[in-house]
Image (spheres, rainbow, N blue to C red):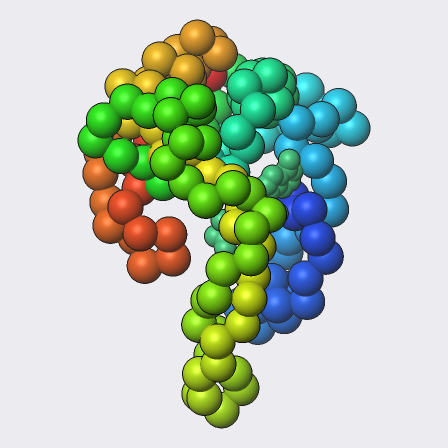
Length: 167
Ligand SMILES: C[S@@+](CC[C@H](N)C(=O)[O-])C[C@H]1O[C@@H](n2cnc3c(N)ncnc32)[C@H](O)[C@@H]1O
């Protein structure tokens, strides 16, 4: 059986329930992706990142995260990265000028059990929608070989760059 590991910053019941329903064996761990030292090096063939990298706006933390991914991948292992992005390069400084300040409360619509909608106030979370060129440079600099990069409008996250990179 292949080993799957998934990392979260919070424990959530839903992924566990879904894994049980689908009869998939997943080892869920709550942890910080910028420190994966507790995982044996060269253990995995594939790392999947759906919307995690774009949320890390500190450049040093992004670098740490990508380095840790490289460490836990086997040689030749793949990194599947699906993160929000844009067509134009954007610096963190310009992004911070453009977006509402992280932590600011804004109204968001949520759907309740039974389908009813409600507006609640939620804090803005920072995210860095880099261009394909920026993602490619960043991953290459970290030590990955970028095999493929393409644009997709995803259901969960909206416009994303999908990157398949190799160790
Ligand atoms: C946009 S959500 C995507 C969640 C999930 N992959 C999905 O598709 O539903 C981004 C996730 O990245 C997690 N995240 C951000 N920084 C992290 C970190 N340093 N370590 C672990 N998880 C992190 C957040 O907790 C959040 O759950």
